[in-house]
Length: 266
Ligand code: ADP
Ligand code: 5GP
Image (cartoon, rainbow, N blue to C red; front, top):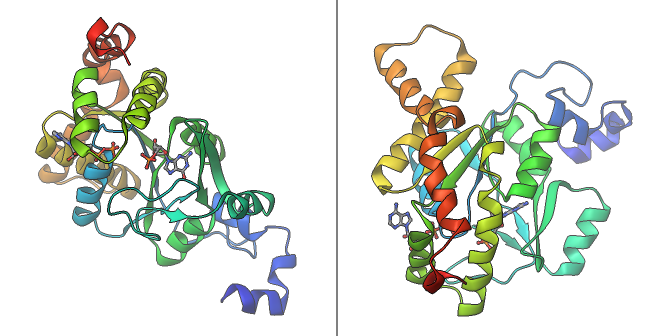
């Protein structure tokens, strides 16, 4: 039933609103839903390689949709409206906040708004797809509060120097923006331990395999059927990236941001 049809028959008058329905796994009529999308949250300091990883992941995993966020920032490089982001003026974003259209939203770097529209959750539910949110630390916390079952993944660069090099290599930002992103990275990285999985993006191919394993292993956990030997390998690979299993490797990375050499300080 379309939203328009539901309005006509008064379904939206029910106690369970459409917004609540998408977030609780109930239908608008309060019936148990047959499919509740798995929500994957992926966060990383800018330049870690998150977009590269996400693009590859979406090619590999079926029935996984990307939540195209809304933002007030200007398009960068070859970005297209509706593909990487919905680029909207600040007034339109603020209107969407007032109309409660966002599952979460945040002011990132204190300059621009970014937000996840609730409708992507509803659409994934209708299509029986899972949903991937590429959002910052603040947004991840908001989503975890509302949807505690969401699976969160934090992508780290191998160290600060590599992050700086990747930001420059991308050549999409002016020097001032790169500087701001490096300052923000230090703060963002301190939140790594709020995530379920940590992916250190060193070798790209290995990272893609690991990210795919994390996504598939969460699907396998939900299916509750016995695992084949191949599936067991997937789960083992994913488990290597669980927070508890990477703490030792993360320590030096965090330290490289806390005490960068004088020449590398932004
Ligand atoms: P983010 O989305 O986290 O801001 P990008 O995906 O745009 O980062 O990656 C930043 C730059 O680093 C790009 O030029 C990308 O090609 C490169 N990159 C990504 N992952 C790796 C990797 N594992 N090794 C080397 N370069 C990488
Ligand atoms: P960029 O400007 O490099 O595309 O993204 C900057 C930051 O904003 C990244 O950390 C990205 O994950 C985050 N971001 C993108 N979309 C959203 C969103 O919808 N909500 C929140 N909270 N952060 C977002």
